[in-house]
Length: 183
Image 1 (cartoon, rainbow, N blue to C red):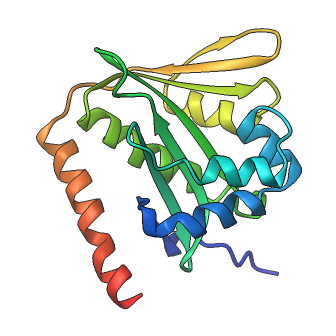
Image 2 (image 1 turned 120 degrees about the vertical axis):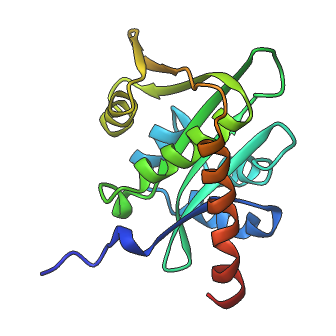
């Protein structure tokens, strides 16, 4: 049987307040293992919903990966307005049934460009030691991995914005409008 999950149906875009229900639904669809990996521990449905309702606050950017109009993956970049040079933390989640088709890579690329364009000097990603997909994603993008007894910290240093990175973000943000209007 052919795999019905296809990355060519993937749309990655910045999430807005109008996406709040999709964000809540995405987090609730995470299975126990994926939810534990995302939150570095067990979290109840109530805890997930409380977290999801605050994800689009002033000091964060969230991007979503939509397949067939459904939010299947999400990355949150937080804390970049608290210091100079700017430092941010990135947290990823991809629903288990949608892993290994490029969603994590697409979210990473989109978020890295957004961080670069906001002059984020350091991106940190924390994951549990056993979270091999996240460790692989970080290593694939040349992150420095710092391993301790329970967790792994991945550290990246984006370069300054370039005309290409700015154009890349503008194209990504404007290419979503036809989909939103007619999709």
